[in-house]
Figure 1 (cartoon, helix red, strand yellow):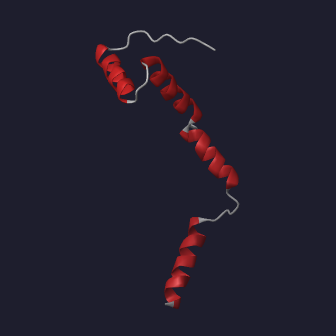
Figure 2 (cartoon, helix red, strand yellow):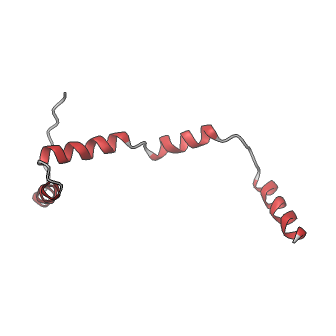
Figure 3 (cartoon, helix red, strand yellow):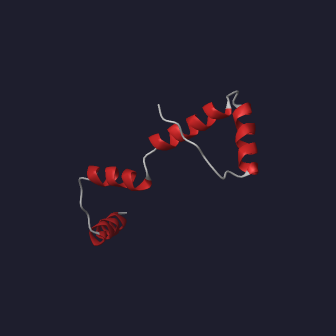
Length: 76
């Protein structure tokens, strides 16, 4: 397992992290490790959009969609 050192962290940030760790009944190390693991497990916006795009099966032009909406309105 790797070790990570964080330098130049503000006192206010460190204090807040300690408070949040205590509220969660965790050590500071365990709390920050959990935060980092959650962040690493969350796909980036770019990755999420790529996944969505790869699943798209229909290719519709804006004009086609608007035409269908107009047709639906005329039926009512």
